[in-house]
Amino acid sequence: MESITLYFRKGPSDKVYQASISSKDAGYHVHFAYGRRGSTLNTGSKTHTPVEYPIAKGIYDKLVREKMAKGYMPGTDAAPTTPPESPNKHTGIQCQLLNPINEQQLDQVLLNPDYWMQEKLDGRRLLLKKDGDQITGINRLGFPTAVPETIARSAAKYPRNFVLDGEAVGDTYNAFDLLTIGPEDMRHLAFSVRYLRLRDMLNAFDHPHIREVRVFFPPQSVGWFQQFKNEGKEGVVFKHKDAPYTPGRPNSGGSQLKFKFHETASFIVTKVNDKRSVSLILFAGEKVRPAGNVTIPPNHEIPEPGTVVECRYLYAFKESGSIYQPVYLGARSDIRAAECVTAQLKYKADAMSAAA
Image (cartoon, rainbow, N blue to C red; front, side, top):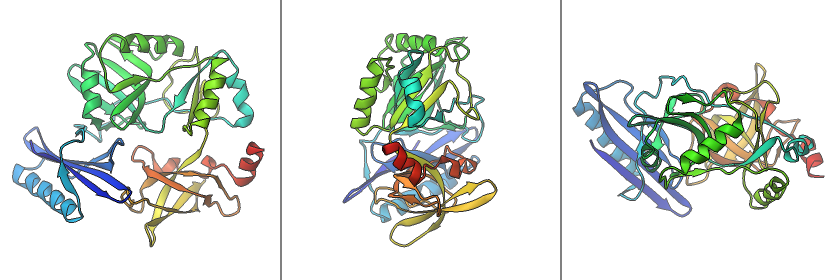
C-alpha cells in the first residue's frame, strides 16, 4: 500500500515523519510515525477502526499536505517503521521493571560477585517477539508497539520463535535478556542461564541490527562502571545471577536494580507556554504539584497538555518541587500518568550530599 517518509531539516532540527496506508480485514488503516532522525519513532494511527479506501486515502493525503506545508520534504533513506496490528490489545507479556539505588547502596552490588552489571542504554524499552513470520514489538506496559523495519528484518532471520527484552536505540536493538526460545519459557530460570542462552542464540545467526548488551563481573565491573560514567552514559543495571524474570516492579528493592549517572523523571505536561516551553506537574498522593517548566528543542514536536514526557535534570528544589536545569528528552507513550509522582525526584540536599 501507499507510504511516504518526510524529512524536516533546519538548523539543529532534524525530524522524520512517516505516513502509510495498510489493509486489514475488509478495510484500511492510516498509520503514522514521527521523531528525531536516528531515534526510535513514536507511532500512532489516524483510524481506530478499518475504513473504506477512499476515506483512508483522504486522511493520508491530508496528513502529507499538512506536513509538507510545514516544510517537510520527501526522502527515501529512513528505515520504515512497522506499525502494530492491534495497538490497544494487551499482549499478555509484561517486562520486568527495576528499582533505583543510591550512592550509599552502590558498593553493596558493584563489588558483589553475585550481581552482574550491564550498561543502561538511553533508548526505548522494547520486548521483541518472533512468532513464525510475525515480528511484534511490545512496550513496557505490555501493549504492541512499532518496530523499525531494520530490526524486524534482523529478528526474522532466526529460525525459531523467541521473546527478547532490550532497548531500541535508533535502528539497533540492544538485547539484554531472553524470555522464551522455541517452546521453552526461560523466565523461571536464573539470569545467568538466560544470558548465556541469549549469547548462544545471537551467535547462531546473522543479525546486523541486533546487538548483545554485555555483562561484567567484579573486579572488571568497577573499571567499566567508571568508564561508562566518564563517557556520559545513562547508567548501569545490576542483576542477581540467580534471579528469575519477574514481571512488573517490586514495591522496593528487588533482585534487579538500576543506578543512573544522570537524574531523569517522567512528568505530565499541563500547559504550553511561550517560546517553545511547557509547564510540568507531578502527583504527590492525591495532590498535584508543579514541577517547573522545560524548553522543547527545535528537533522535537511541542507536546500537548496531558502528554507524559521525560526530562533530565540536575536536582529538584524541595520547597517548590521545580527541577533545576531541565533538559527535554521526549514524549513517553509507554509510561502511564499515574507513574509521574514526586517520589521519582532527587532533591537538592540529597544531590549535594551524594556529590560530596
